[in-house]
Structures are given as C-alpha cells and as structure tokens.
Image (cartoon, rainbow, N blue to C red):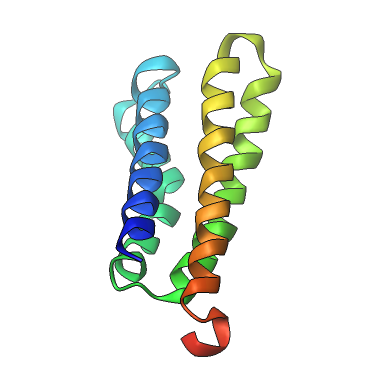
Length: 116
C-alpha cells in the first residue's frame, strides 16, 4: 500500500507543478495577487486530499479519483487550443493515472463502507 501512496503523492505533486508552471510561466494573469489567488483556487482540491492520502484513508483515494476529473476536463479544454496542446495532454494523462490509482486505492483499502 505504501507504493500506491507514493504514486498518488507523485501524481498529485505533478499536477500541482504542472498547474503552477502553466499559471506562473506559460499563461499568467495580469496581476500578481490575482494570479496567486487563481492558482490557489486551482490547487486547493489537491491540497485537501493530502492528509487522507498520507493516512491511507479509502475516502481520500475515492475523492482523489473524483477531483482528478476536474483536471481531466481542464486538460481536454487545453488540448483543443493549439498553443497549449502539450500542457493539456500532460494534464489529461496525469489526471487519468490519478483516477486509476484512486480507484485501486479505494478498492484495496476496503471501499467506502470501511471508511465511514
């Protein structure tokens, strides 16, 4: 289970880093404060997952799969635009891997009934 936890943390960190790269360097907003607030709004769902992932909670792995759908949808929208296609494909790939890891983690930890 520790290997799955490590993979989950790597995927969450990768999505966090990809979002920061895009937000601060590739396509930043005009104001620095607005840019930081928008970045925090985008990564806040990932930050809420971390305590549960570190404690190996089935509910956190379930919500990791659900939250990653937000990044999947955002990645698809980025893929449509030609100038950000590569970033979008990376985001889609990382999000799909997080869905897979989240579903495996939920199943291995006993599902949601054990988490209640």
